[in-house]
Image 1 (cartoon, rainbow, N blue to C red):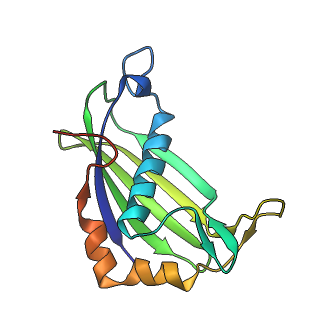
Image 2 (cartoon, rainbow, N blue to C red; image 1 turned 180 degrees about the vertical axis):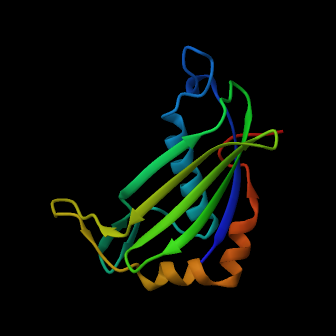
Amino acid sequence: MSVEFRTRRRVEWADTDQAGIVHFARFFVFMEAAEHAFWRSLGLSVHSECDGDIISWPRLVAECEYFRPVSFEDILDIHVHLEKQGEKSLSFRFEFHCDGEHIAQGRLKIACCVCNPGEAIRAIPIPDFITTRLSSPKSRKLAAHDSTELAEVP
């Protein structure tokens, strides 16, 4: 399975460290924001209800590799690839580009879980309403469109 989504983000002052480059931890924020935009492009959310249960997606794996620094006001092109759909999990790869150069790459593996208040979190099979959206040709087409909703980019 390979569904791709692209979005853009402008590096803001709050994203940078004392050296004037993006702090390494901010890439995890960028990945999460791009993941949320991916879900919205499919008409879904990372937080939904199914049969009276709250469904959410805790992280099992989160990693990022950096190839070159980026600075304040740089424009990041973020490519989100849904690489694998398991029974209870999804695996994403994120590619970050700036001025056409590959500057970082990250990965998230997330678990589909029931997260009801006052109850232990438990993994469940991904509900049909989600798998249908992930696998339909229309949704794949929607997910392939560029989005600039993370930040205004001229």
